Image (cartoon, rainbow, N blue to C red):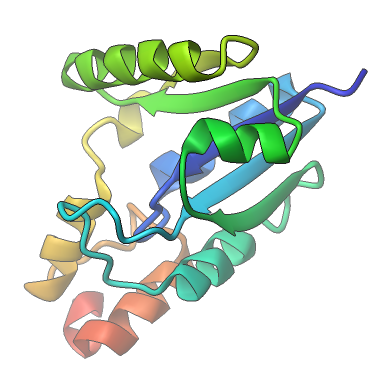
Length: 167
């Protein structure tokens, strides 16, 4: 039986930290679905990029990973995991502060879909400080984010914020 894993997130935008976790998950599982959450039910998430823009950026950043596909979903993550036949949900952890949230989410998902496991991968140390929120703030204020995001994302941020993102 093929082992399918879902790596869900907003990926707004996808960072080198996300790419690292996706590449490592692809080495562990037969197939990885990078699921971009497109729902607007969560008021605390205001996306800079549309779901289709995020899908396109992620697909470009991960085109070198043959057993990974990028898709867009809304609704419950565990429902989408069931829809794509995933037995595992992959989450990335940057710091201890991420653990409490992920711990609670894993238990809720286990309650909703006990057949689906959650695996957390620790981000590589060089990516541990990177967050999509920080990337957007730094880019908006003209800082250089090229070490934190794939080049396709630098170009997309430049289109959103202007040439200041490449200083």
